[in-house]
Image 1 (spheres, rainbow, N blue to C red):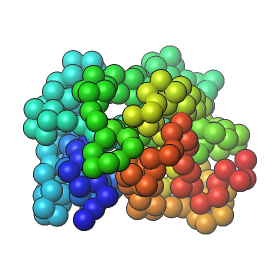
Image 2 (image 1 turned 180 degrees about the vertical axis):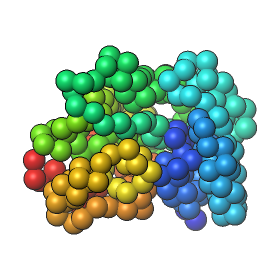
Image 3 (image 1 turned 120 degrees about the horizontal axis):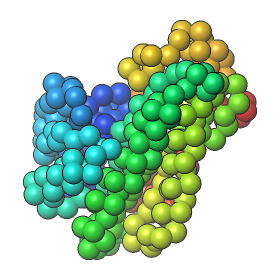
Length: 258
């Protein structure tokens, strides 16, 4: 038996990179999974097929998580298919690079929307049904909300140069997590993952020079998608029932150097 048997998870940005790895890790522990995507339906369908091959139920749901109507439609579709959402993985987000002095307001606002607005909209849409849930099988918690921050959101410094908007958004997610945890205790926990740099396609627009300098900061080198996915699976499971408002950091020692 898996630690998430009988539960349904919604993973935003679940078609690629960390999101896809997390969706698969949830399924490996027994969860049914709704895989959100905004553009790459082909990639979302690949993740869904892999989950179904494990014997779990899965659907792909298109939605731009910065648009309220899209989010409401997505949550309705997931509830219509599975009846409930016990695990919400807020993972959707973007990463762009530019000097702050050159940054147009539109780029700043796009980054805040991609991370903070999406976390707000998706969490708020899921909460009414989550608040009606009771713990399963004698567990202590009814539902789990997981947010995706970043190690750079805690340390800033030289590593944050040319991605000030991204660092700011990720730091905001930590504040969101800690405050919401206080509001939703004790039946719903809210925890953040604060990973290091993991080679996925989100890094595609960053310079090779930035990546080389960043890698020097990791005591254990760049991490893998699995490092983050296993952390998410732990937070989603009953093993983490006494964690809330916490920031778990699978970042290979990066935060020790800043």
